[in-house]
Image (cartoon, rainbow, N blue to C red; front, side, top):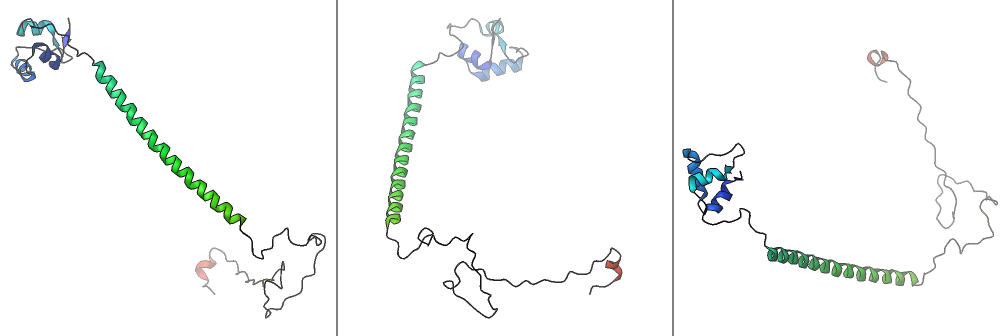
Amino acid sequence: MKSLSVVELSKLYSINRQTIYNHINKGILSKNSDNKIDLSEAIRVFGEPSKKQSVKEPVKVDSQNSTENLLLRQQIDMLKNQLEDAKERESFYQNQIETMQRLLEAPKANITTFIDQKHEQNIATDPQKEPELKADELTTPVETENKRIPVPEHIEPEPEKRGFWSRFFRPYD
C-alpha cells in the first residue's frame, strides 16, 4: 500500500500536522519503520479523504518560464556591463599606445647610439693598450670610455685550522 509522510497526509485530509503528531503520540495512528504512515492506516483513523487530490503538487510551467526569463535577463545585463568595461579598457590602452608612439617620435637631443659609433675599430681584433692608473688619480667617464678600473685585491690570511679538542683546550687568539 502507499506510504505518506505527515506533510502529505495533512494536505490530503486538510488537517493540521500537529493533530497527526498528537494521534501518533496517543497511539491512535502508527508509523512505519521509515517514519511514514500507510494510507490504509490513515483511512482507518480519519476515514476516506473527501477530495481525491494527488499527493504531489503540480509544477507550474509559467513560474518556471518566468524564472528562466529573469535569470536570462540578469545574465544579459551582466554581459552588457562587461562589454562596456572592455570598451573603456580598450580606449584607455589605445590612448596609452598613441602617447607612447608620440614620445618615441620626439627628437632625441645629442644621444649617440651604438650604431652611430665608428665601425672602423673592431674591439675583438684591435686590442687597445690600457694605461696604468695610479691609486690617487681620478678620471672622468669621458676620458676613460670602455676602460677598466683596477680593483685592489685585499686578501686576508686564512686562520689556522684547529681540531676538535683544541677548540676546548686552546683559547681563541
